[in-house]
Each structure stands twice: as C-alpha cells, then as structure tokens.
Length: 141
Image (cartoon, rainbow, N blue to C red; front, side, top):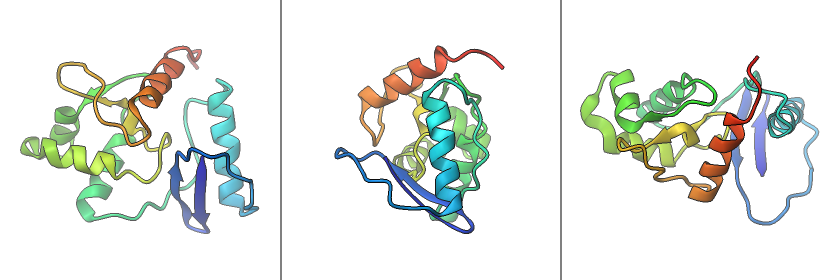
C-alpha cells in the first residue's frame, strides 16, 4: 500500500502491485501504518488517524457518508444516496466511491449492489471480498 499524508491528515491510501519501501517518518503517516497493521492483525475496528482527502464537494460528502457504515456491515449505493439526501444520485455515488483516495479507512469496500452483489472496487473485487471476509472474522469489541 502507498500512504500519503501531511500535517492535516492522510490524503491517500492506495493499493499498489509492487511492494513499497517505507520511506516516510511523518507522524500522521506512521500513525496510519500502525493502525492499518493493527487492522490486518485483527486488533483494530476503528481508525483515529486524521484524514484530509481532496475531492469535489459531492465526493467529500459521499466519503463522509461512507465513514458512517459500521464495521463488518455492508450497505448499497442507494443507501448512501439516501443518506446524503439524493436518492437519484446512485450512479454518481458509484463514481465518487470509485475515486475514494483513502482505501480501507474510508470504507468504500463496504458498499455493494442493491442485489447484494459485490460490484466495483478500485482495488479489485478480490480485495473487496477479502476485506469483507476479514471484517466478519474480527472479534466484537
């Protein structure tokens, strides 16, 4: 994973195919690394690292709504559209979801199709499925 941050918070967490060298000692990046390590070790269900995503007003609204989806649960694109007060924006929700710059912490992997199907994930559907199964297996806190 590639993590980018500055004093205000994390601006990007993206999946990359080649292993990345750890080359940042910025405190907010180190906090994100620690929290993600704990998440993958099944020791963390909530993230506290500050976030500073860049996007349109609509995208920011969608990404904020994504952060309300409870750990280990899924909702549909329509659910998110309803949450932000625009039920006709389902396709736009999908577009904003696909442009989410902060994978895992802004949990776009928890958004599924209305039929319950796993659809659309920039990190690949196999990762989406893995993340959802990983969260199911974490103990309750």
